[in-house]
Amino acid sequence: MNPNPLFCMFASVMLAATSALAQSPRWILEEVFCHEVGAQLQYVTRVQGHGGLTKVVLDNLPDDVDVSDVQVDLPTGMKLVAIDQSEGVAGPSSDLLSMIDEEKALELSMALEAALLQSLEQEQRFLEANRGIAGSNDVLLVDDLDEMRHYVAQRHRILAMEAVELRESLKSMEDQLASLREAMAPWRREAGRGRRLLTLVLSGTGQGELTLRASTQQAGWVSSYDLAWEEGTGKLQVERYAKVIQSTGIDWNDVILNLRTGQPLGEMVGRQPVARRTLLQSSEAEGGMSYCASYEWVSSGLRDDRARAEVLQGQGAFASNWQMTGSKPVSVNGNANPSRVWLDRVVLDASPRWEVRSGPSDAAAKSCHTTGWMELAMLSGEGRVFRGNTMVGGVPVNMPAWGDSLVVELGRDQEVRVKRSMLQDESGTRRWSGKTVVTQMRRIEIVNDKSYGVLVDVSEAIPEGPAMQVEVDATAGGAWNREVGQVEWPKQAIAAGETWTADVRIRLVLPPGVRVSNF
Figure 1 (cartoon, helix red, strand yellow):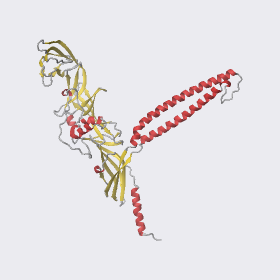
Figure 2: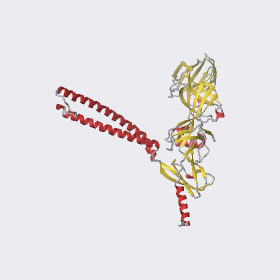
Figure 3: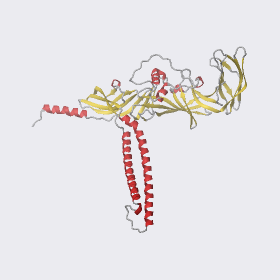
Figure 4: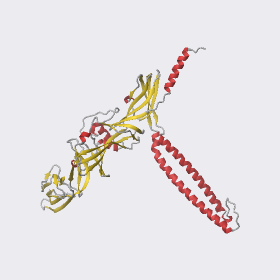
């Protein structure tokens, strides 16, 4: 019997459609292009077309992926017909499933221990009820009542000790279970988190690799540095890292990490010309330094909307079209816990500088100046300062908005000591005007205990205010800078083992009722 041709054609079409719908390729997150705000995720898989329509589904995408931003590269011979966007839930991850198995095992162990403890307690109650005849489940072939009482007492002790051990074991397992459930809580929440699914409808007869790129705003990074000054060499050791964070709930496992400034395709922000915040370095900063917006954005766990807006307005790392690729595949968890990714190690020529300012410290602040950052296109970020293998502190590392010298703070140098003394301190109130007159003579001494000369910037703050009269005279070439309210001795050279000394005479006339504190 010859088959019906129409039936055969219909069956062939249905078979091809069934085969296409049944395709479930394995997607690999191969590469991530991480920007200061957001990231572009690159997935790859293999597909094969049979001439009809082929549907390929990519699930477990970040919930803010927008189909309009998706880019697709297809094998030769295949065409993209449509992309459909839908919603789903993440479901339990492999880590959560492993924790669930551990939870069940603990619960079973606790149930067995509880049953054993109950059995021991029943035996204890039975012995107590039959203490007079020394009854037990054992058959006692003894006539001596003393021996019977001894057996009962010994059995009581054994049961009591076993009960104590069981209760301790149960308490330990209860603590383990509580800790495990606490650790499972975020994973359970993540399992119910929304996920974006993309369904690609393809046509054609090609086969090969399919590449899909999708963008998310739930990621960011900032430069991070380990800085170590090599004493006596004029070299600054710099290890460059990227502090990467992403809160998509989806781990990036063994991906090629490409770092970029700005943001990827996706959310567009109206950009109006704005004045950048001045990020000051070293002695130029009054009352400490500021971290750049990229650092604040990452350190907030991607929750600081103000910092995010500043990054998008160009106030992040202060660089455009910057890019760098990691040296090897890395993994970054999706739960907003930052990962510090090593990039490279360089040695920069630098010159040391010391600074002495008003305050209680008895040691000069040390820093080093380098112009090598320009050649390496270093970005603003955070720094960890090391002496040998010991970290001595963390500081902002901000590339200068003007000039060419990057200043890296290295902490206090106990070999450049500061001594302050008050040679004269007099004050009094004028009888008729009620004004207060303060007269002081201060001395500043800087002792260089090093085996080589140092260059020190020295300053001494003098209070100023409305209607105040200020007179200042300083030795050793000190100049009174009225605009910033301090006497300055820039670049004072102090030879090895020498002491630099300067005296400052200050005369203040204060209006009635005005007092100066901490002066």
